[in-house]
Length: 73
Image (cartoon, rainbow, N blue to C red; front, side, top):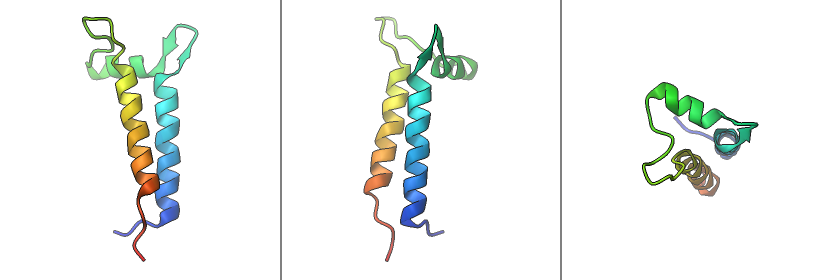
């Protein structure tokens, strides 16, 4: 399956939006924490590090890779 350059950009924007909403808190409610909780994954480490931010960074990194990907000619 061949994805066009426009398709890569749309997917990258989608991943950026997911990363934003995954890490953003709305008055003591964090969507990423809720999703991770339902998946049975921890949201905080034992040292007090917010693990949810790592998932957001991973989404952003994937988006950057997609933006740099060149569509086949």
